[in-house]
Length: 377
Image (cartoon, rainbow, N blue to C red; front, side, top):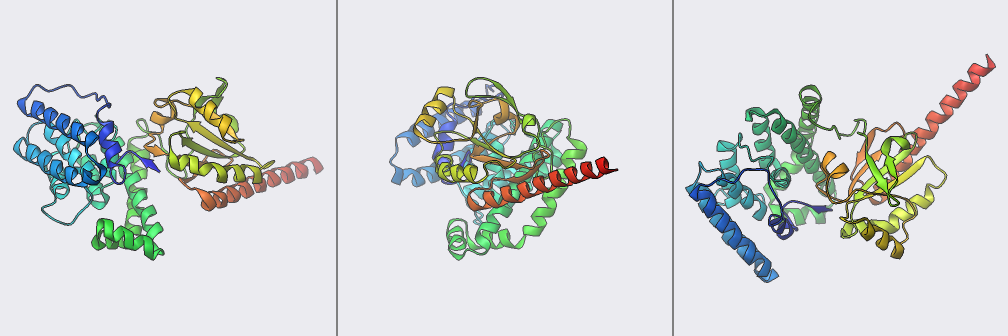
């Protein structure tokens, strides 16, 4: 997946900052001006430094942003500096690590920050910090005075808990993947990941219930088991299309972009799946997040993609309504329009689709039998 947070794509995420516009008013404090200068300096260097030298540069500037935050703890720019540090570092158990210090400071003094929703990548960054990030998000839900922020953070927390459990499932019976993750994030992190799957699942359910009870008017429920919200888009000919028009069919919603490598890699398998499910109550819908519709149409002239295509654009629509943070983002809906699976690909997607098609065909048979019985009476 192409994700908008730290990890292999840390450089891409940092560069995003240069073009992201936030809704936060510009402060005039000297500390904020100093932060802007530090940010400008870093962005200039990261664009020009050799790939081999980037890790050292990130370590150097993580320390510089930490120095700024600790020196200006009461200035709003401290929050921005701590988020920058989290984007540059991985989870660690070293008390002296800038990322560890940043998380500790955020939990102690920034759970009521008005900036939590100001940058679209902030929640994604926090969600990717494992248990530490989850602890901070829980505290924000308890402490923050704005209901909207509480709601958005609850959504991010659920995603974080679910993401950790997906990762646990991937490494549980895969020694190579487990060893690789231990090298990247440490044995203690992996042990915690595997030991607390049940606890995280319970917490995810707890916060899903909270969303429904307290924040139903503020958020879109995209959890497994929820009815999928309406999607209004357009096809490649500009005709208005709606998700509700597909009710009665099993639907795979694939939110993608032509520039996304993992999205392109899916095409051959998707082609086989669509062919296999021909004449079944099934539809595969790819919703493009490319900035221009022409980009998609030109791409499809060179790539055989014989299924349903809609175009959303790079922002608004389903991208904002469903808070898409990575590509591809995949939802699999049953014939009643209920979200049953998320982010499955390859054979796992095939298995999910086949299961839901059997359910759809079974319901159809029952209805036909019931109708026949009524006619016989």
